[in-house]
Image (cartoon, rainbow, N blue to C red; front, side):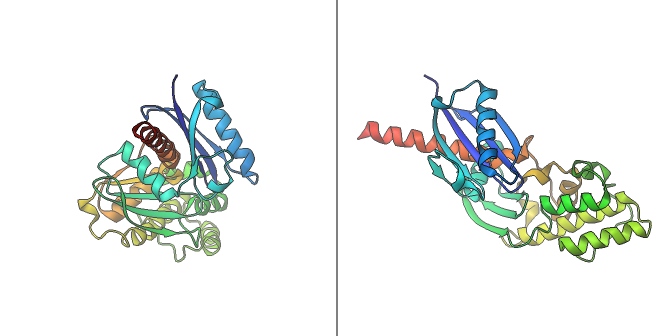
Length: 272
């Protein structure tokens, strides 16, 4: 009988689920909006990922939850911090990674990893939404564009605009003023992305001094924004690895941890 393991990452903007098989191979994943009723989002994510893989809920051997809403997941085997799950997830996708930068819906993290993939140190900004997914959503509204368009609007180079504030409220007012002055939207977008990159670099410096000597990766929904990735790469002075599905790194790590813990428990029972 095949074995399956599920990871669910309940974030502020999205609820992500990944299903892996007994060898740790990802079979299916989904990303759904968290919304105001996260229990409904959790159930929807679970239902969608199992349906996508053609697997019944009874075949899931273990479920590990992570994210800020991890304790809300019903029938979980364990709840594990997002720091640990993101480290495990990126380790499976990019084993050489020594610094992971995760920018989610409401917080940012810089995670320093050892050669064995274990967490050596981390820094987290969870007191302010500046530079996160919610920040970009607010700026997109002010610019009257879709948040998914921001990466393509970024000119990447040219006349660089500097924002005076990263506070979401003040930055939104500044964007409105810049638009009223006739400043081109791409120039404003480039300034926003550089501001995020500079703020993230300051966070990363709390766990690493020399970025050029490290393999750096990025996870979280903001990693889909090519403008932010480009600006951060320039700010750190190094290339940045972005997995094909950066949103699901935490959920993938949770699923792999579910598999490992279940198999360790089974091995322990056999040996005893």
